[in-house]
Length: 89
Image 1: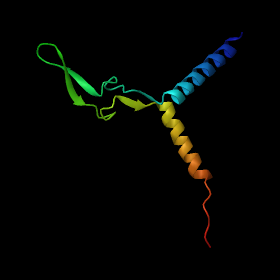
Image 2: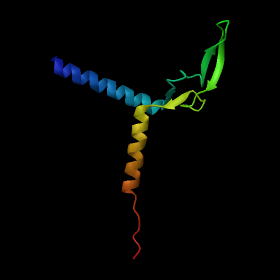
Image 3: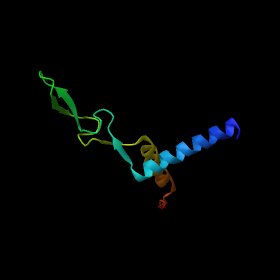
Image 4: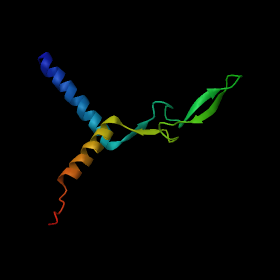
């Protein structure tokens, strides 16, 4: 197998795998709060303490994946461009 064919195969496998992941699980853990929904802080003793609610995920701990966001955007544009609107004269 040539290196170019191997690279194309690997890229295709990664792309199909990620698109499958976005289809099955459109939401992933928030990168800012790591899925907790809030920031963790430590007190003076070094114990973990709940901090403020995460603004990025609105305290849910989940955010939409980039691939799913792109798909939703594409689908919305396609839907608005292909719907028929009646022209009134």
